[in-house]
Length: 323
View (tube, one colour):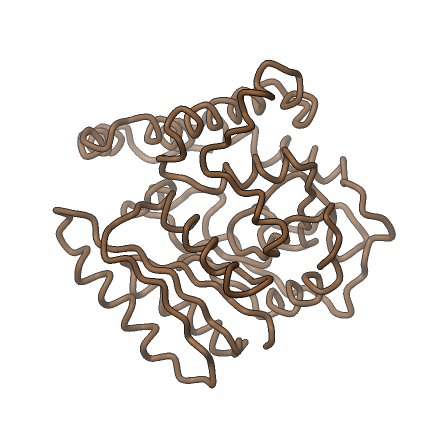
């Protein structure tokens, strides 16, 4: 496979191994590996990080493995962001996977074809692999154009990622305008995203997420995402050791990945699918917005690091999320 792949790993060797098994079947010629360092004072982190990196050492197909390993812990906000920036300095475009995102084999040619097709189209900034739901999207084509920036298995170009800004410095100029509500067209969703952008701006990007700043970059530059007709990624990282998705039964986790048919049926125009975006808000995002799991996720981003162990103990007492 010609398309470079960026793999982001940390301290979960078993999950890393599952993703690498799928990569072995795709056989990318270039594999750029981004790894975070162990957290200070966290038992098991040094060994977990070492074992996850050892999985990469066992890559056997003919492949140029380029490593970007951090000796210190940068966190699950800064490390992916800095790693993707580094990778896209090495290559013009790439498929990006984290250690808990297992793709269907058809995900790779799907991304490869669309990276080439829209390489010079500034309107398209993101190619997603996840739909976050079972079943097919309401389209006769292989994909739709969307404002939903799905970050579980995706692809992009250097020319798009150059707009990424972890501190969302453009946000204050937009916050007092109707820009966000006009874009999302739902008050609850707009309030959620305004909060996320507020925190990222106030903390100058020192937060436990990077994907929301990437969403901001796409939205602020009128960028569209490509979303496949069927889900192409299974997220296997839900559980107590996850940073955000703590609960095994999270409805967005462990969704099956399906095969997408080739040749791809391309939409005739680069236009956002209002129907697909409205369905996502109605059936996936809004029902999940104020579940216990979602509230914990938002709260975990504003709780100081020193208090997070106590916060997690309280969250465990509250019990698992419900739909």
